[in-house]
Length: 288
Image 1 (spheres, rainbow, N blue to C red):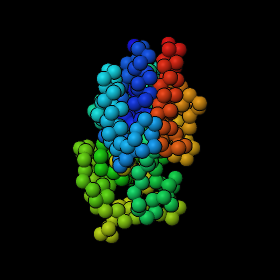
Image 2 (cartoon, helix red, strand yellow; image 1 turned 90 degrees about the vertical axis):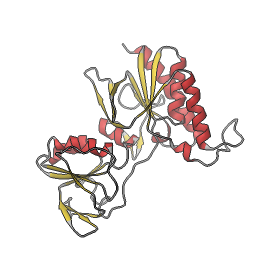
Image 3 (cartoon, helix red, strand yellow; image 1 turned 180 degrees about the vertical axis):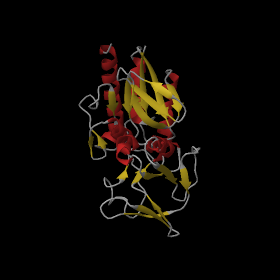
């Protein structure tokens, strides 16, 4: 059977998974890294068939129903997406690599950027959100990565292949991932990213500085926009652009839910997920 992988266990992702699984022709896996934005809703009172229910309850019911159908759920953090020789997606997690015949990105619409003086002002002038996109520009230069988890380590390892030095800046937070020996770590709180026309240094709250040419932001886990940017998906601001079938500009890669913009409601996410699931069924049936 063809393998469909869905990143995200919110209403968009699970709705797509249900349609794919019910087609009876596809192996379906959902990769989840904790609760979705829906779970944070205190009470849902405007959804068809529900008088009142917490977002967490609604999400749990949806996931349990999917599991009963035989849909596989994997608890892992996606750190990158690549492609094999046949241009089929390879989803790299902090635990393993998974290959898919079709991929749906349904991870919500967050982009985590810390409030640090100079960071937004120097975006595109030494501040980057994508190591694999911009590592080339920092060959044999000193760079740093702001973050403290698996996503930050992944970005740092990419940069370490070509940069002179790579330093993880945890911004005063505790490391949650193992750091390779060739990568330095500074645990101080960041005061500012400094430079006139380009990044020149980072200043910490004790007024010490680190001279760098590039600052890469990898806070928390990779979001939909982060992953989309790395593989060349077309974006409209922070939204992933899709056609009427929820397909992106890359064949076999779909997106649904909040990451595509529009009405940020459960009803819209479910519709997107259903549309994506049906389109993925057709794509998998038509592909060789």
